[in-house]
Image (cartoon, rainbow over all chains, first blue to last red; front, side, top):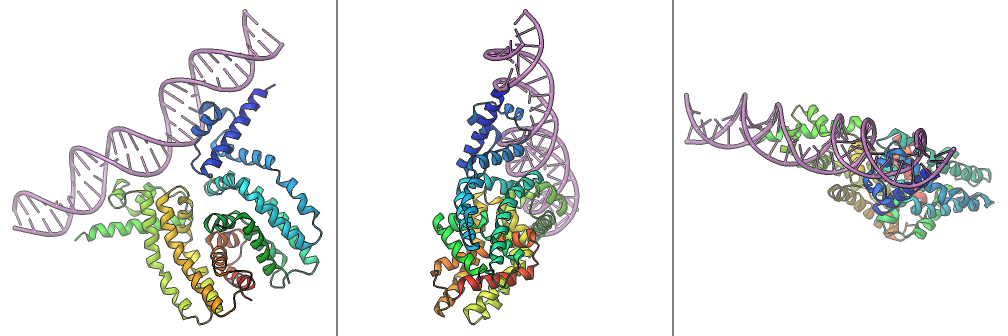
Length: 194
Length: 194
DNA sequence: GCATTCAATTGACACTGTGTCAAGTAATCA
DNA sequence: TGATTACTTGACACAGTGTCAATTGAATGC
């Protein structure tokens, strides 16, 4: 079988991930990745049609390894809306730093590339549906602050746990990740609950 | 005098601004800007050392024209902390859409360029000091929610009125600008005030 | 009125990074 | 043995930035 091809593919994906981690998501050239993977620059194109395809494939690869969905078992175990909210912020908040480099690369690329934008929207819609479930539960429990309808509350929640906000508060304001999670929980309670 | 040179410089700055507006901050090539300005591509370098210098100069140019500081007279007229908070969100919220294209270009470039990052930090530190003044006033009036100390409150305020959040809520969630301002005011009250 | 100076033009070129192509090699399969 | 597969190498096209030298044309000074 083409298991050798698959092995090389994996080597490339791992090298891409490593390079992104080392450069915080910037300036990762095909040539550098190839060097790290131990193959020629041109051979990269035997596995991925373009740089952008490689990036998108890397996101999927990392996502599989990091298993966000498994982590969200904690979220699924939550009984009340408030519990759901807390565990969503906790699980997601602990997830961000692990995927930050790749996410950053995607965030920068999506502005100039339609395929990346679409792939990113796919990732984000997953998160958004968890926000939706959470808010709907809170609403059913009559705990939703009357300032907001369900849609608005979802949008606020989704925005306020965004990677950009995490970035600003942790990397620029030097909050620890724990502080980010705790404070975000606290302030989402203030905003969203009665 | 070199008033002809200044005229051309202005033409370039205006062309840059126009191009950025039309492309929402992306994909503005030196050649395109030169064409719009009605000069040769190479002549651009008689006025600006590099693309990045041109971008930074354009930010300053637009900032002068838009006169954020004059608008903040409204902010300075505020008596109470809550009034300050409301007018900060209002003035800034109305300012963002006018400078969004350039801000976007800066946000994308600053990740790869130190000079841009520094210039951007300069812009942001202005906003941050207004946040600081606001929170300090609220604190002195004993209105600051006990969940936060002054520094944290400033960081939360500064983050939650960020361009990224404006972008996500208006451009992605289709909030009107008025809705963004009103909702942001409401939710900052919930978070920050006793 | 002539010479100088300044702003801009033109064409050429170096450099970086992406993506493509053709020819060749070395291991594997059958 | 001969074909296929995965990869290598060197060359090249293309876009975009930035540089340089030679040139033009208009305004300015004396």
